[in-house]
Length: 340
Length: 211
Image (cartoon, rainbow over all chains, first blue to last red):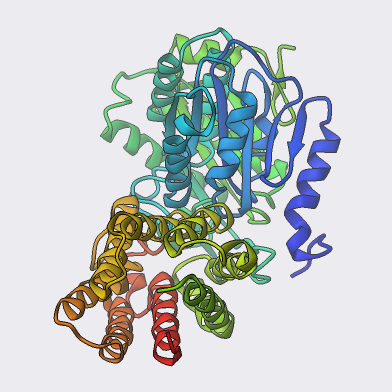
């Protein structure tokens, strides 16, 4: 293992401290329990809290700020954060309209956020109400190493962006949850790995994969996907991904009309150059067009990573006016910024 | 059961986790992501470090505090599940108020039942429950039959081992190996292994303790 590390036990704290210092205009870091909030705590809005294992940066702390999250709770690498982190974060950021937890559908995350939500009414003098949006956009597999049901992956960024935008308007908890559920439902993702990732504490690659292989449908922790396949040219790989997404959206009766507007997100897993991500975008755009899907919004880059895994995921979110409006609205976070 | 016994068990559990590093790591690398050992080590170590804070508490209060500590220390799926066990056991002990063997058996079963509810899982799904449910059932049956400590501990060590070994041939439908399908067959579930190790440590501690 060759990584920029001092002591393995210090990786998370040193990285969080660096992040908080680099973006000190946007975020504040609390240690023990570990959570990050906006520098300026917002008032009179639903407070949106997300979190999950570390190693997916910029998810979630990179999305704290105006128009997105109010707080994020980072766990150890690929390990869910704990309820005390969520309760402490909720106590700091709640602003009288309740807490919306955005949780990627993994058994550990679900259970920890569930326990936090159960404890939240008793954690403060005045009870705080909460609701939860579970993201489950990965159409690669139904059950996985860490999930019952579909995994939450890069589509989570779109959910956080849209719900964050709605919350800024003063919308209530129920409306924020409803939009989150809708965006999640209209989104499908699939990922491909060319190499494994290496969890610092493990010190060696999570899985073995040869130079001539790829893992189709890989998860964001390097967990297995649909199948191991032979490496081939990019167009053929992207075509399989696009077909998987189209099949999923049709099967779930989300994609029904002949033409539809959509947002296309090409997400890098951490060790794939932007040059290749744009190449993937180029192909995916054409293929979706052939299916009558008009890409009217796009995002290309490393938004939901898996440490140092080489590979990428393709996410398609079918847009309606409401989702489009909340995608376009101003956002100011460390990892996403436009309009202000 | 005295709080001092819980404290001695905490140390024994920490030691058995440390002594089985390579076993737990290789099992979890095969069908998980290799962090189970690290998480268990962190949790077990945190409990051993709480000795001073726990020793003045009643057994149920100590178990509840252990549950809360595990909840904030382990993370992942193991954290809430193990925390639920200790909190469920603490509540059952507190509610019952007596110190009979059937009470401990019922409290253990109450803890296991909370794991089942929290994890929405049951026996046969290649998880820690494949060890815990048979052990809980047998503990209750032996306690009801007035078995002595030696009989109970010996039997539970054996049952835990059988439950752990049985996960080898299962396809996982819950927990970390779900989704691997047949790829998980032939591998013992790491959570079942660590539970077997912990139960064995508790039983051996009881067999060798004087009170």
